[in-house]
Image (cartoon, rainbow, N blue to C red; front, side, top):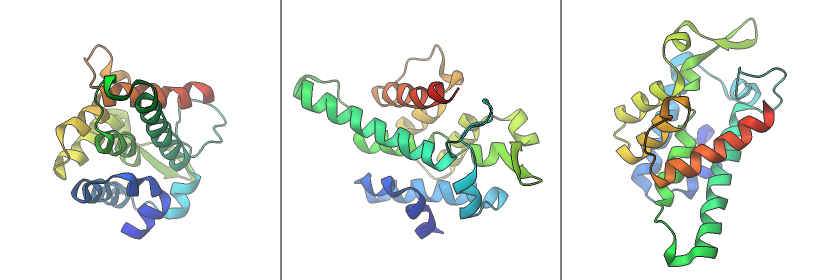
Length: 177
């Protein structure tokens, strides 16, 4: 399973800390196993059910937003250097890769189409994502990114990594919507 996850999400290898990288993979393994997602289904699943005719897949969304976060951090380093607000790159990448992992619990496939599951009607993906991360002892700073990235984080004071992720995520979402 680990090989499939790294193949789907090669950005995992950008996490320098091996223990954190392994925890991210473990969260994905649990989420995939929860509903028995296959590589084929993961590659074809739309990243949101909140818009019509979404052509961007879940995996491509996760990867694109993660890469936007890395690019944003690179720009801040290049332009602001030591004057920038400190950002933990590993936490930023881990949070970007885990923010939507709960959608694998929130969605299910019915008659070949993704739909919001009964579970998903009661528990949105930021909550299930934090639950998975907590189970695997992911640092609280990364859980903060997962918890605050969507509407559930409105009004919360976000860490720098969460600010970057939130805006990158909504760039992709708003362009599709």
